[in-house]
Amino acid sequence: MSPEFLLQKFGYLAVFIGTFLEGETILVMAGFFAERGYLEIFTVMLVACLGAFCGHVFWFWLGRTQGVRLLERFPKMKKHFGKGIRMFERYGAPAIFITQWLYGLRVTCAVIIGISRISLLKFLLYEALTCTIWAIVIGSLGYYFGRAVERLLGRAAHIEKWGLLLLVIVGLGIWGYRKWKDRREDQPS
Image (cartoon, rainbow, N blue to C red; front, side, top):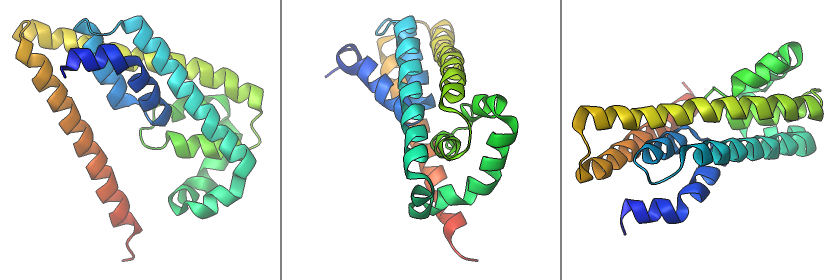
């Protein structure tokens, strides 16, 4: 199956699921493929916004309903809890905005916000605004990355395949590095 077929068939669903969980890598790739004509950039941004928003609301709800039990189950999350709860309760809306841009900590932050005393309405309003801005900025970066590749190399069929492979390799490299770093931090000295 060609990348075009997969993107036309499953592209927006992949964007939704990817942004529900974390997001940057899938959103940059979707922006790149939107520039190549396989997806529509405004739909990519809308789906990414909805995926990120739904994901954060889910993790917020989990923090609100499961609270400290969730922290006991996931020690890495507990490590960030004390500072995080004070930051969210002290700064509120700006802290909600900033967490959207913290790669690898968004899930933890949404759980901590759920545990905090921040109101549901405040969280929903600021999260909707933040997810919208995030989807536009990151989607645009992927789109203009694709445009830059086109200008540098011209339209060539093999570029899409190599570009996708490169993005997948970079994404896996980042993921692997984070896993290695997390394991290293968890080992007693």
